[in-house]
Structure formats: structure tokens, C-alpha cells
Image (tube, rainbow, N blue to C red; front, top):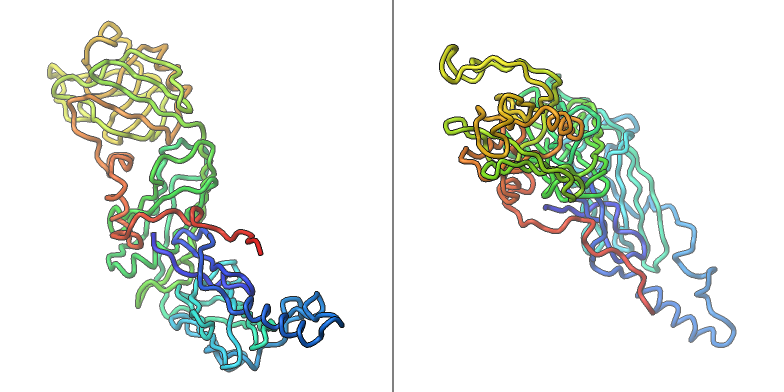
Length: 450
């Protein structure tokens, strides 16, 4: 995962810098020690020698760290507009520099909606510049912290407004699914109202699509095509996680004639870890809840020529009643395989028509033989139980079938059948980069003994 140093991390007297991932999660990572600590200790030692038994000046009254910050206006330079009402160009990175007798220790930059601008501070503290794009028609506040050659802290607050977009063409993102309760296998989707093909523009879009979960997970976006992205964790979502999805793309320039638009956020509440595994060769479905086997159900799956797909699928919807006709899946009406049946307790796992459902007509074969046209059939009583205990987003997995593997995309959610390395390669941000630890796994600042 690519990381950029945030402007939030170089605090006075702190030896660590904040690191932001593309998803916006923050963690502390080691950086070059500040000069402030050494300078303060040396100053104290010299004062002790000079003052002798009469006392020291390194208590609360003389420590530069406890002094009221001075106005750093004369110490720093900013590349923002000179006029009070002159708008800034959002395409131009922000830059703050300091003169020779001091250093920058911290810069935070955020707009009025709370979106932070990532940035990079030079090792010697002489220059900070933004590394993420600014939004158009936005109000930004920069809080700059400095120190002089004696270690005394300075502060300066800067504000600016960016100009309006130069075109009315906007990119709108629609997240899915709708806010609600889902199982651990539910991917997040982002559908764009117009195609984005350029890799650099894709990176701008992807960087602004935020997925945050509690507890945190290692996840990534994958570009399905020019107008659709899917997001999934490396493993299934943790049971009872909360997932929030929103876009920071509003007002952000994507291309010469395209700017981001507002998008509606969504919130997913993940339930128990439900995984139903059907062994087609054993003619049995095992229902797991939070890693406990709580039910085993005799089933029948697809017969030769209609074999059930192998692999991981995700529950798409539940229907109390469905009329199933062979003509909808290409079976000629009146042929030996033709059917037209009322079906109850139907749990859908593909858009092409694969369900887990009640099949009272095949009870004699359930647990012994595969006789269906591709669905997983069970008794009415077992189907009702399954229907009551399964939820949208839960995982339904088929093993040991002679059928093909579930498609990755286009027929439901086969996202989990793709290897994680391959999944990450479909990201415009982390594709081709090492699978690094999550930011929250990076070492954090800890008290040190003296």
C-alpha cells in the first residue's frame, strides 16, 4: 500500500510523523529525530553551569516547549494568493517555507468540510508542500507550527479560497449497496456516471473514494471496468464490523474537462460470520455461524450438463416465492429438461438464476444424487430454516462440483474467487506495489525511558 507523509505528523518535540494510506487511516511511523530535543537539553546544561546553586531555568518557566507560541508571520513564506479576495488555483500545490533562522515542525491543511490535504515536510524543516489535489470552490485553513534557533515555538494560521471549476462537466459516483445490514462477504461498489480510462485520472478518483471500517481491515479498490470499482478486504469483513463509505471527490479536478461531484455516503453494518458450504460430491450443505458448524443439510446440486458453479458466491437477495421456467436459462419449452415450477424460500446467488431453494420434488435424491438444473435444492423444511438464517451479503460456497468456477464479475459477486495479489493489481493506487502492513500495524509512538 502506498503511503504519503501527512502534514499532521511533524509535531513539536515529537519524533514520529503521521502516515496516511489511500483510505485515509492514520498511524505513526518513525522519522528523523527533531533537533528540538537535543537543543533544549544542551540549553539546560549550559544554564545549570552558569547559574550554579542559584537554580536553573529549565523548569516550567524556562522550557521553550511551555512558552506561548510567538507569531511566525515574519518567519514563513506562503505561495497562496497575495490579495485578500483573490482565489487560489486548485491545480497549484500549496507550499510553505521558512527563513534561515528557524524550521517548520508541523503543518495541517483542511477544508471547511473536514477534508485534510496530505503533504510532505522536508527533513530539515525548511519546506512543506501539499501532495494531494485541492478541491475547487473550497475554503482551506492551514495551521503552521515553527521553532526558532533557540527552540521557541511559533504559530501562524493561513486561509485561502480556491477558484471555481472551469467546466460544468462533473463525475458522479454512486456507492452500493444501500445503507443497511449485510453479511461478511458483501463487497462495496462504486459506479461512475461516465468512463475514466486514464490511469492518472483513475488514481485521482480512487484516492478520493474512502472506505473505513471498525475494526480496521486491509482492503483495496479494484477497477472492474472504466465505470465501476469494487472494494473488498483481503479476508472477509470481521463479524459485527461497521463500514462507512464516502467520497472526497467533490470539487476535485480529475482531468482537463472533468471535475468531481458530490456523492451520497453509505454505511454497512456487518452481522455474524455466516458461511454456507455445499459439497456437491457429498450432496451436503454445512452451515457455519461464527466458525461453528450449526447445521448440515442434505442437498442436490446440478446434474451433468447443468453442473453448479464452484467457488464463492454472495447472497444477492431472498425471495419467498419465485416462478422458475427453463426457458429463462435457455432450455427449450417442451424438451425433456423443460420446467415451469413455483419455488419457495429462494435465496439468490447469481443473476443468471442460481438459487438455494426448496425442492420437494427431489427429496428422494437429496443427500444421494445431483439432479437439479444448477440450483442447490433441499426439502421445504430445510429451505425455510436456511431462508430464515441467511442474509444478503452472506457467503455461499460450492466445492467439488464438476461445474466451472463462479465468474469474478458480472453475474453477482464472485470477487472472493480472485487471489489477493491479482485483486490489488486492479487498483490504480496500490497495483504493482508490495502488500505492505496496514497503517495501524506500523509502530506507534511510545514513551521512552530517560
